[in-house]
Length: 63
Image (cartoon, rainbow, N blue to C red; front, side, top):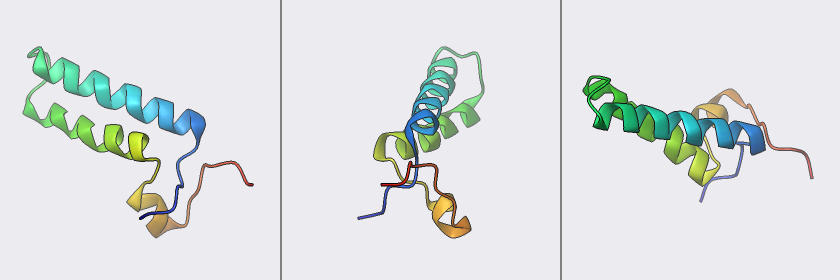
């Protein structure tokens, strides 16, 4: 559907940050806004970021 534009380290960082935010919110350490961690989690899992597409950015290695 979307072209992959999120590379290796970027993907890993997005997934980790997303999981940490969601976990901290679920444990009550952060308010409900912490569920915004779903955004980096999903962009990391799918490998595509709509903001990168709009800005013309790409962190994937060239083929």
